[in-house]
Image (cartoon, rainbow, N blue to C red; front, top):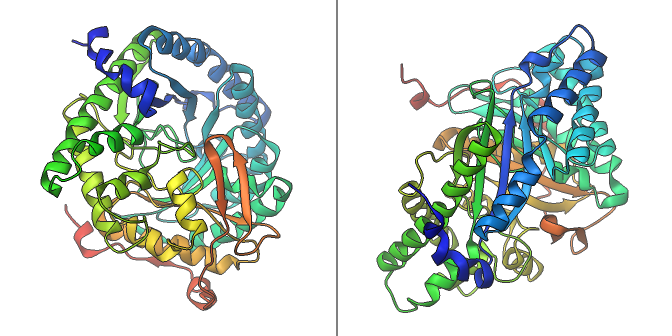
Length: 451
C-alpha cells in the first residue's frame, strides 16, 4: 500500500533537486470513432477526447497539491491517426486539427498520435498520410507526430526512411518563422512502444486498454545530488547509490499513477523510469555523467558512464513499481539539457558521439539542430543509422532533428520552455543519396527469428 508517508522523504528532492512527475499521460483509443466521412470522424474524435480527458488537468493539479510533487505536463496520446483515417487519408488533417482543438480547450500541453506504423511496408493510404504531416504540424499548436519505420522483427522500411528525410525538411520550411519548431513535434522510431508517455513519440497502441494512465517520472537533479555524497566511491558503489535513488523517485511516480488512474476511471498503464532533463541548471543528465567523473560530457568514457547510469536507473526503478514500461532509462536531448547545450556550444560533443551514446540509453538522437541546407538524403541516412542500432540491439531508438531553415553551424535555435535551445551542429558532408535512393527493406537480423 502507498500512502502520503511514502513521499515525505521526497520533499527535499522537490524543493532543492528538481524532482517532478514529468508527465501524466492519458491514452485514449479512437477505434470506435471511425465513421463514414472525415468530417464525422473528426467530430467523433473531438467528442471522445473531450469526454475522456475532461478531468485530466484538474485531477493532476489536485494530486500535485495533495502530495507536494510538481506534475509538469498533462498529456494525451491516441490511436495512430493513420489507422483512423485509412478510408479518407487525403483528409487526415481534419482529425489532426480536431485533436489539437480538444487539447487547447482542455488545457493539455501536448497530444501525441498523429502517427503511422510502417515498419514493414507503407500502404497507399499511409503514403498519403505521411505527406500530410508537415502541413498539419505547421497549422496546429499542441499536436505531435511519430512514424515507426523499423523493428527488430521486420527490419527497416527504407522507402519510409527516404520519405521521412524530406518530411523533416518540409516541416522545417513551413515552420521557419519559429526556428523550424514543427520538427520538435516530429519523431521517427525503430521499435516504437505502445505505452510511451513522453512526447513527441507517444501514441496509444492498439493492444492497450480503452483508456489508460501512463506516468513519466524525472529526477536528474536528485541523482546528481545523491552522487555528491559518494565522491570517492568506486563505480560499483556509485551504481548502488543511483539504484537506491531511482527507487525513491519511482515510488513517488507509482503513487501518482495509481491515484490518477483511480480518480479518472482509467486503467493504470505503466510508470516510465526515464530521467528526463530540462534546460534548468541542476536538472541535467549530462551533469550526472560529469558527477560520475567525466570532465565534460562527450569525451571518452561518456558512453560507458551513460550505460552504467541507464542500467542502475532501471534496476532501482523496477523494484518500486508494479508496472514499468514506456522507454525507461535516460534521455539525452541536446536542446533540453543544459549540460548537453553547453557541451555542444563548446564543441565537446558531436553527432557521432551522440549516436554512440544512443546504443546504451533510452532512445536516440533527440532535439538536435542541424544546418537548414542539409540534404533530405543525409537526414534519411541519419534516421537509417539510428534505426539500425535499434533493430540490431532490440531496443527503441529514435530521431528528432531540427534542420533549422536558413541557419548554419554555429547559429542557435531557441524554442523556450522545456524544448530549450540548441546550437546548430555539423553533419557529415559525404553524400548518402545513392544508398537512400535504393529504397526497399533492410532485412531483420537473423536473431529476430525466434518462433
